[in-house]
Length: 145
Image 1 (spheres, rainbow, N blue to C red):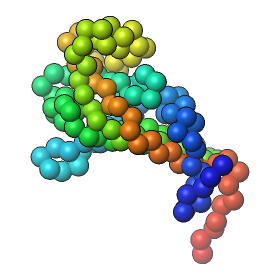
Image 2 (image 1 turned 30 degrees about the vertical axis):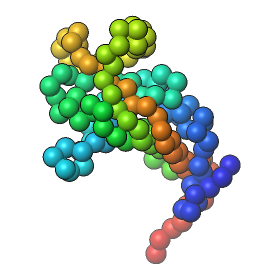
Image 3 (image 1 turned 90 degrees about the horizontal axis):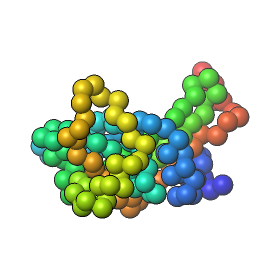
């Protein structure tokens, strides 16, 4: 397994996507009024692409209309000091094509947000850059003085 400059494992693209697909919540990182913004969403992977829902007219729906965004998901265990983080960077777009809509509507993507979700937009982030990092189990701990 390769390591980065900080000694963290760097899983392959395929393994990173498998890790990301194992959790239900991630964070969309986007620009709002020229400032960085982050919003958690529940999501599903469709191959390497991230799919989630956004309320029409919301700041998230506006920010993900054809823009480059980042998406991050992770899982950590404080007791074992292990875990992983995967970030995808790519173009976000709303799904409008009827055939593609039929496909994403069949994905196991149930909204965690309250209220009816019949009019949500489906947003797809096309995975360009995929970067994973992992703190392995059994890593020695360093005590500070």
